[in-house]
Image 1 (cartoon, rainbow, N blue to C red):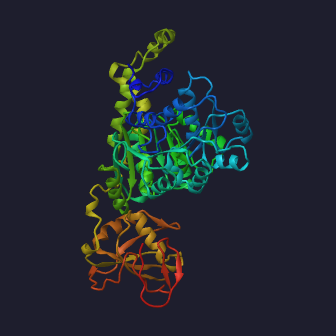
Image 2: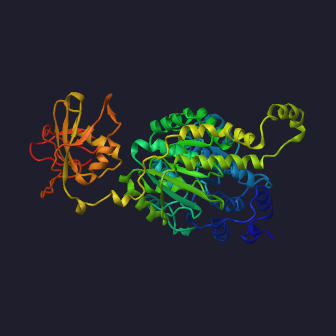
Image 3: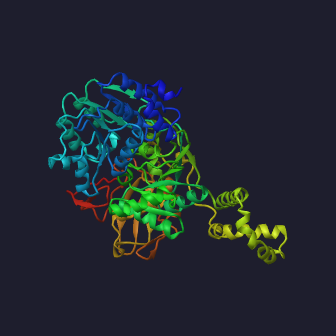
Length: 578
């Protein structure tokens, strides 16, 4: 007997889902389906990671309790994005393949509204919708929610992150007081709790896995590099994983496009997905990614919401998100359906605290690793090529007519020479690129470089060969120190800006790092040089009025904000933080 049968699923639905390859229910399905079938009038709040089978968990009870003779909208499923909305509608259509009379409509923005209106007017039992388009059709009087039986909030945390709180409140307030609410979320935030308190009636809470935790099948790695080496680190990580199929997450639309352009120019199968793309462009990119014509999708969090692509091997955080919950969402896109996945963070040292915070939330430790060297990458690529050759299937009937000529052209080569030449055809580009580029400066033991204030030992005075005439300001200098060293908590003291050069004070324990990090750097085309200005080295300070960012002598009319901008302040001592 089917294990779905044991949950109370009907034969017609079992037949449909078995055709889709569903053999055994997932944990969330095993928990949710029997509960909702036995308690059809209950509200539920389900916490489970993305990709755990939530759609079937809430859809099957809805389908089995649906009245096919009723002409009004009985069930509404709300989701954050067009992609997820369409996917839910497609899944519902598949589950109801052997049930007559059920009509399903997908309602979403970015597509012609007239066709959607026409479909609703023909009658729909279940609507899969995005909040914005549903509100639009409600305002036009096209959709009436007065007889809705059930509202499902799928990816509820994502909808709140995208700013749909007001829309959700209005939609839920328009539905009957007797309606059932089923909320599904990957994390439990205060806003989620607020929605539950305001719109749900004694919801049954079902937690699959640990609250706010990441998927058990995902491994987490972190590479600490200097900020200027972030893209080089990305390339090496990709080269070291030749079978990679994943998403690279960036913070901004601009950075997303820049990283995608760099990857494309360097010969990688990559493309960008962000909010500046038209719907048509977005569909082209996503279609290429789904059929694996792209191996890397570079995306912002907003643009990637609702994307459900199977078999992703890697998630790469080119930048960490501002909200820890978003990291859980990102990493949850891999390691699905029992498969293992890898989530990688490329970080600089000032983000070590955020890494520790994420570890507490996901209840897992990051493996702190060194960026692969050229030798390691070439070895990995070489044996991947050998494995590929070893396993390739030969269509003898197609290739046989060409073999005599091939043998004639290669007969002068012995076995060893032939293998070397064959391997080199594919392999030479890696050897050429990584020749002389063996090591990328990485910092594995971060505890060596990150100290609290108690570990502060005093300032060293430095000289740098740029000044007022070069347009140097305190914020500019501190931004360079942050970027070039990759360390965001170096104590900075006095900054004295003169005509052609500048003196600045910094924590003496970082002297070598500061001087080495400025080598080969330039500012407005001028090569930079940093040296220790005084032979006596460290200047001890008992006063603790020197904070990160320090103060400066010549420009003390302004106080610097964290962004490097300036605002007028009263005369006196100044404190800054970089």
